[in-house]
Image (tube, rainbow, N blue to C red; front, side, top):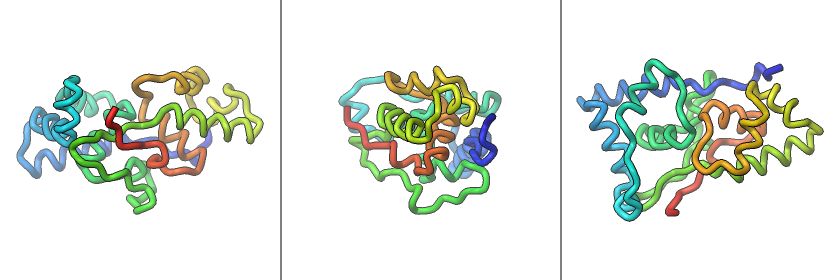
Length: 177
């Protein structure tokens, strides 16, 4: 049974914060996507990978789900922590994400998240299925983090860190690849 103390990550509130900032600055969604991408302009020039699509942003309004990696772009632009989008929590300093320059990009370390989660799971004497029940997801979503290359759902990542009693920032680093 899902632990009721674990707060869901509020994607709708993240979208509303983006919409509010977008409106305040008089930007189109394309311009917001460009600004998100430009936060890591130096790194992006070196990597030559693809930018955030405006549809990634606008889809949040109707499909309140976001990858943990995409959420970091948005949180960085807003200057907010992931915990500030958990109902009932504030944006305390202990939750602050690392500050990075344009030569870096914030990334979740999913292998580190998996290792810490597995260590606590074992210490608590839980099976993967029992932990999945507590977190309200399938066991395969948890075990897949060990080999994940890209992302998981932001809500799952945030339920994991809450269950461990740790800030999300413990699992976010300044990537240069």
